[in-house]
Image 1 (spheres, rainbow, N blue to C red):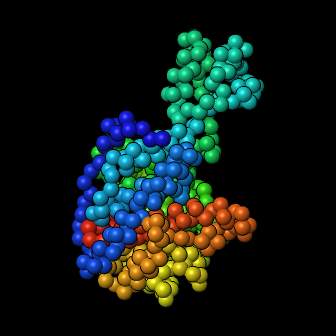
Image 2 (image 1 turned 90 degrees about the vertical axis):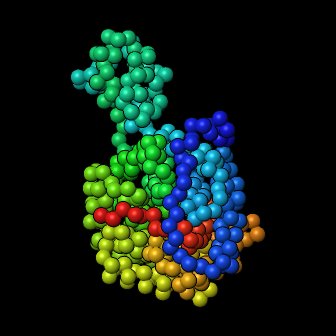
Image 3 (image 1 turned 30 degrees about the vertical axis):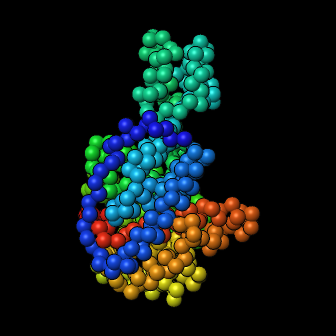
Length: 411
């Protein structure tokens, strides 16, 4: 449970969002959108906080979208509890930082014979309480070694122990997962650029860079590899989200810039796949880094995918769902389409009409997941309901006056 006493330490996250009018809606239409977003927030808070307390995990489909949906609502002039938002963000950051084990001694690493760094039995015996204990930095490991070893033992064996403890890129070092990190950066893009917020974003970016593949891509993780599309397409989608996250909102440093360029070289050999999200992410990347002509073509493709009921489907010919519709509105908002554009209006109308009494949107797990077992689909149903509700709320928030494209930095 998040403790109230954490609140003073979290004031770094509170700030005033920049508000630049972009869309012109009628008062009634705007009121309907605001009401829909406001109705969604209690559901997102209740289920998101429940996930944090019961699972103790940030998760690519839950906690980042708790933060992102509330940040979008706040940026669009909808009142949110800044204190809670700050607490949730601090909890998430701490979770991510505990999911690092760049240094960890194991029984195997201590027992393994090494030609030039043989550990005396008395030294190994003193280290038994450190076995399997993770450390995010070499400094943290050395501090613990200094606590259990004599000064002479530490001086003699420090280099050998650091070498034995150094871990490769492995699941223990995921910080919550690539897609979680991307969503956290995108969702927190409007934080005030003060020291704590900048440290938070820099920390997430640094870990993402470590996980980039040799070909410039990033591998999908969490729920994404099990969605109903080819694995290569999921990796391409994750790579596009990562590129967008790393380039938002400020100009990247040199290592980040190089990582983005390598990713763009990889992506230039790809094209949108079968899922609507693949088209959405291709459009967003093209708008930010590509050509106006190609972006216009992708935008036309997205508009053409709209169903007669105003929504979009996870896959081209399927039934409309809030997940795909929210993502599509998000992309249209980033494209600076006016709220009175017929495509935007129909998308908004579909979401307003399909919202449930509790503020959520139903998203059939069968529409997105590749699972065929009914028990598995039933288990996934709450996840996709939450995920889709968050995307619907984000998409609707972006159509309100005061919202603006967040990817402000242009290369």
